[in-house]
Length: 135
Length: 135
DNA sequence: ACAAATGATACTACTGTGGTATCATTATGC
DNA sequence: GCATAATGATACCACAGTAGTATCATTTGT
Ligand code: FES
Ligand code: FES
Image (cartoon, rainbow over all chains, first blue to last red):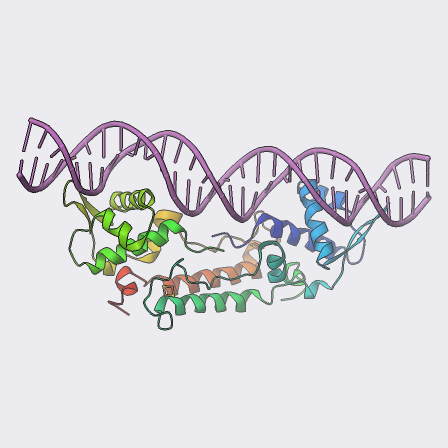
């Protein structure tokens, strides 16, 4: 029951680090050193973040990455979506539905509740929030 | 974000079917026919349920399986535990913790809340409940 | 021109899930 | 007592998703 994969995890770490630098361009090499993430894997992740518009990239000597949008607006759930697809727990737990009537299914209601609760809790979490810049 | 794997799914289906038969011995062959689960896979699952004390088994002609405990006391979460390990979402989402201080981590609190909420909802769900014998 | 950075892309390795196959053991009924 | 119908035990195989690597092309600053 893993909610977050390595991709997302590393992405969050990298973004937190870059956010803390407040506008200073950060190269992949620096992130590798500080965060101890395997270099090629991290590069792949940064490239995705760039393509998705979360980071801006600068090539050449002195190049690297910058946040493309403010840390307050980079949401955890969006990152999850990028690397793992839409966050949802609210499919029927069972492949071929068990209950006779899906509309009255008790279990289904419970699952919807859980999903909604989880979203309510996680939706406001942003990079800014994770580095303590915001409650 | 799969909460339930096929093992567990099939186990629940099989148990529901057996429970509905109210004390009549049910053979694997019958379950295969009715539930359309691949035979060897189902057999493996039934054997696990037997070893775990959820089912009693009877060998030989006319043999099969019976619930070893009443349907009201076979809980979904216990089945999940058998086939997938302890149900928990409340590890830190990130492999190596991000936040400086785990005790004050906001995200962690949210995750605990989600976990607790999910448990509160799912804990009472039993086989009896799934076949409509109990709210 | 050269070096230092990223872009693009294809490939490999590992792990968990889902599923098979085989042979041994036990109980029943003729 | 033997054939048959069931389960027990165990080892194996296949697929998919995750995790990670490798390579070469492109851009940029000095
Ligand atoms: S068991 Fe899935 S909708 Fe009821
Ligand atoms: S980020 Fe995991 S405990 Fe804070």
